[in-house]
Amino acid sequence: MSWIRTVPDDQWEGELEPLHGRVVDRDLGRVDHIMAVHSINPRGLAAHDGLYRSAMAGTGTLRKVERELIAYVVSLENDCHY
Image (cartoon, rainbow, N blue to C red; front, top):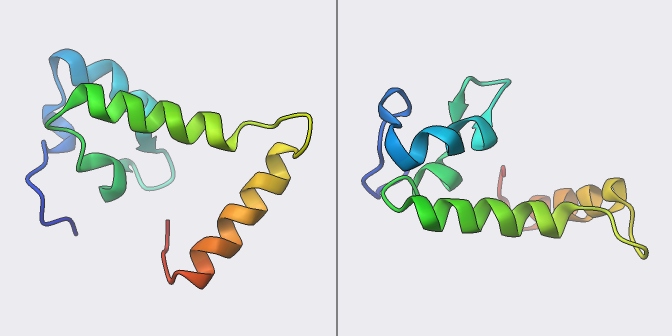
């Protein structure tokens, strides 16, 4: 649970509304806290989402699956469930 004030999922309106579909965890039906903390700043949320998608996209050097595996191992080592 985040300690930063966030906008509840059912109140994402205006600039937040189109971002909701991009960042919602479809398995859980909610926005993960790591993204929800940006809900009071839609531009920050869009930037975080863009950075994440860019970092996780496949390149000529590493395929997407390899990047996902690296992210998974780093998260395990950092005891981070994201």
